[in-house]
Amino acid sequence: MLTMAAVRFVVFVATLLVCDAADDPIVEVKSGKVAGRVVEFAHKDVEVKRTVHVFQGIPFAEPPVGGLRFRAPEPKSPWQGVRDAKELGNACMQPAVPLLPVEEPKSEDCLYLNIFAPQTGADKLPVMVWIHGGGFVHGSGGTGYDGTALAAIGDVIVVTINYRLGPFGYLSSGKFHLRNDRLSKWLVKGIGDERVTGNYGFLDQVLALQWVQDNIAAFGGDAKKVTLFGESAGGISIEYLMLSPLTDGLFHRAIMESGTSIMPGFFSSDKVKESIIAHGLGKLVDCEKGTSEELLQCLRGATAEDLKEAGNVKNGKLANVTGIADPFIPFPPVVDGNFLTASPEDLIRDRSFQKRGTDIMIGSLADEGRGFLIMLFPDNANDTEVFMNKTTYEPVSSLFLESYKNSNPAVADAVKLMYVNWEDADSEDADYVEALSQTYGDLYFVCPADLSARAHFQAGSKVYLYQMTHIPDKSLFKMKWLKAMHMEDIPFVFGYHFDSAMNWTMSDDDVMMTLKIMKYWTNFAKTGNPNLSDNDVELTEDEKQTDWPLFKVPGLEYKDLSLRMETKRALKAKECAFWNDFIPKLMKHTDAAQTCSKETEDGQLKYKEEENRQP
Ligand SMILES: *[C@@H]1O[C@H](CO)[C@@H](O)[C@H](O)[C@H]1NC(C)=O
Ligand SMILES: *[C@@H]1O[C@H](CO)[C@@H](O)[C@H](O)[C@H]1NC(C)=O
Ligand SMILES: *[C@@H]1O[C@H](CO)[C@@H](O)[C@H](O)[C@H]1NC(C)=O
Ligand SMILES: *[C@@H]1O[C@H](CO)[C@@H](O)[C@H](O)[C@H]1NC(C)=O
Ligand SMILES: *[C@@H]1O[C@H](CO)[C@@H](O)[C@H](O)[C@H]1NC(C)=O
Image (cartoon, rainbow, N blue to C red; front, side, top):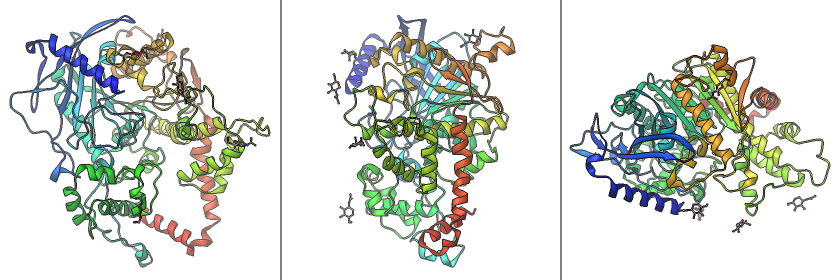
């Protein structure tokens, strides 16, 4: 990846040398002029030749530093003269992830976006805004998301954005209404006031989308045809944006790749825990304070580097100081009464999408769950298959279910019944890897997407569901046993094969998949139908739908993203009934059987959580 940065740098220098400054495309946005650069897109494996104007590092907000830390972003104030927009802006503060390095320098001053505008002669192109993934702690709109190929091949304007991550983006100091004396023993210093309201990263996304509304016409974009697309935390973000009252008119269609707002682990309703974590973070940066107001003032004075380190789950310090070992992210999205008014689960159950009927594409990959198993197979990078026997399976499965906050043995038994291949289970060398992989894939990705697809359908949206089963020849992770793993859709959507700076040559099959996926994605952005391009107006309604039928209930049709692009139906229907219907009921029944233990510590904990759930 370092060499990739070097290659990019060389290409960039070369561009500077050949391009006379007078050739730079200059666009005037509300806050001033920006000068981008010209890229001539051409590739031997595709007929398209396009001039693409690329603008990088355009600020859409004031740097959220000093008094603006832990506050909604402020629009960027105007500048004089022409601002250079030829290089990526800083990425937001984040701990390093060696497997997926982010190349840009990291800084709190990171609210930048990038625009890839193909020159087609048309004056109003559809706009696709990419929201990157990384679990709300990692990533940027830059590394891995060069939009040149997608813009050139798909004739759409591509925008990629940054948003604040980790504690900078999502710290919440909690809010707690004392309702009952019995709760006083859990009273933690500082609870009762709420100064740090969280969701700042989402507010950054909202401001970036507002910026697109205000400025994209100047780049040739149609502000009335904005499609959001994003992967993992990007997909999660997109559904949150659909549930937020702050996004009216900011986008018109959405593509959620491997992420929905109801994925376990990416939402907190536990205000006590939020408060403990916020004060724990404070303690780690010499801000041990009584009230949230004092905490906030002190945290604004801490260095960004110290805050980043304090918020890094990997070093164990936050878990140590708070006694809360969070398996996912310590700073998840919260109900702040502003961006989000209730839990995503409640809002989705009530079909409370702010704009009902926003058309969506939503989906996942066939082997998402394998990502959870990487650490179990450190020495198998070159193997096409890995194996796990029953003896290893049982403890690993329980461990993962505990991280899903479920140590109920009835759930573990039900999961085993559902996922183990019983036909071979008695054999000594029976393989349990697929059982684990499918369990976690379904629990975190496939079945939340099923629930979400049904809700959007019932709210009147056109819904296109997919599952990618194509196993890439060239993988992001270079471990063949991972198969169609989380994130493996990204090289196809962004057309890595066509990005000369990436040196990412794909097989013919992968190139064909790339072109088909790009076509579906950009058709959807143009027409609201992945099978209908601008030129296909002569297709009948039936023809438009035969290739990729709408997801309907009943019906449940979806597209299998593979070389044959088959239409199938009822994706993981039994497994999703299991997770979305049976397991919640099972938990309710087994919990009900235990209510008499209310006076035990466990019972009190449950009681506390229930109190918290009150509005
Ligand atoms: C956890 O806290 C204890 C006591 O304060 C300290 O000795 C230990 O080094 C800490 N461990 C980590 C990983 O920070
Ligand atoms: C995998 O193969 C590569 C190249 O053949 C080799 O350099 C590497 O050490 C192998 N990795 C493992 C874990 O065996
Ligand atoms: C199961 O796998 C573990 C780890 O590879 C191994 O130590 C153990 O001997 C295996 N058990 C059986 C019964 O094969
Ligand atoms: C591009 O990739 C190929 C094959 O992976 C490798 O041999 C070559 O050295 C790379 N070129 C650059 C400039 O990194
Ligand atoms: C759309 O469907 C038609 C008819 O089934 C097919 O010929 C065409 O290739 C499809 N378009 C795309 C982008 O898949």
